[in-house]
Amino acid sequence: MKTAVIGGGAAGLTAAGVAAQNGADVVLFEKNERYGTKLRITGKGRCNVTNNCEKEAFFENVVSNPRFLYSAYSRFDCSSVMSFFESLGVPLKTERGNRVFPVSDKASDIADALINFCRENGVKMINEKVCDIKKADRFKITTSRKEYVFDRVIIATGGLSYPRTGSTGDGYAFAKSLGHNVTELSASLVPLVCYEDICGKCQGLSLKNVTLTAVDSKTGKSVYEELGEMLFTDSGVSGPLVLSASAHMNETEPGRYKLFIDLKPALDIKTLDKRLLRDFSENKNKDIINAFSALLPSKLIAPFMELTGVPHDKKVNSVTVSERERIAELLKRLPLTVKSKAPIAEAVITRGGVDTKQIDPKTMQSKLVPGLYFAGEVIDCDAYTGGFNLQIAFCTGYTAGISSAQ
Image (cartoon, rainbow, N blue to C red; front, side, top):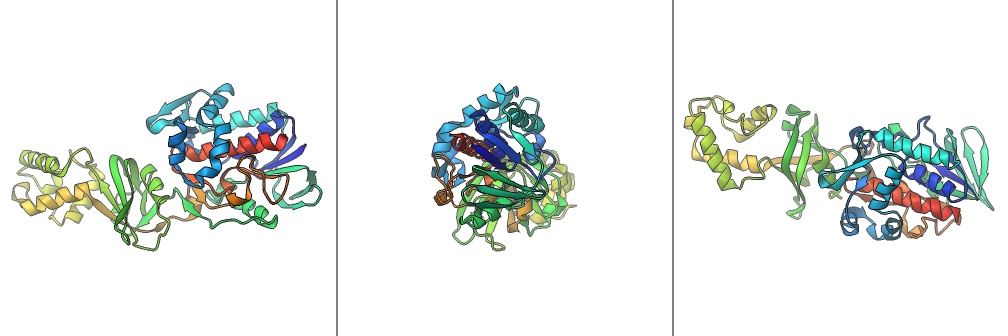
């Protein structure tokens, strides 16, 4: 079968290589000169390939339509993905949270391994932008240069996040033109914009081993709570904890969600108060602003003290019980108010996509257009951080590739 794969990212490269490996005559279209552009910047350039977890843990981390992925995951699960890349000559390692990275810490090693996999299996790689897909007896693909005819087409064009890498929503347009429904698109795993000016004052500061809690003020319920890392940006907060929290914020009208940072999660409030008393006694003749060097990062001290309402130059030995209680309270629950999510262009992943009800989960083939397949972020499936979204790309790409070749 003559097969076109549109999109040279994680899902597209996997689909193309697997389809060719299984006997298809494959042409891979990528509008960027460089293949795997987005893949090369994932995980801060390190590429969190997958997660070294059991099946149950994987599905607990899929936010949208986990049941749709059961068959694809069983075909190419986390351990299979790890074995696959190691067989391609990329040694892997498992870090905190079971996150899997190349030993080299180079995302380019993953991208290059997939490109070589495609080339070794005879995939023809063409740098042309696909402009239109039509289906009669066969598929007619129109690119920026010419027209092509194929028996099968796999759409793996990504979402709307990081548009500079080529993810500009082309696949959604193709899907709609071929009669498919595309669910509402929004940002997931995205930085959050906050009202408080402490964020800008602490811009660039990374907090490690803190607990972030997100509360829906309409219901009063916590929608997310986790220990990990986060950082302040010029307009809000970002980092792994924040990105994961954002996935739980479906309605983001200004002020609806409150964030609380526990800066000392290892200490309960009584133990923390004893710690403050000890630190204060050791610094009793100093200004209060100079008594926090062992408790807080230097960049956070002044903005934190502003929130307490205690004057910077107040002597430690004159701090009242109520002032100390206020300090302890803020150390355990530093509040931020979410104004909005950052734009979808800054998101790690796009929520929404081609309606899974219109795709056969066992093959990734369209239920509406025979011979048309979907893979990766273009499908309405997304997950939390930790390698889970790339795992979705790999297992749907693998399934589309092998199914289209049969």
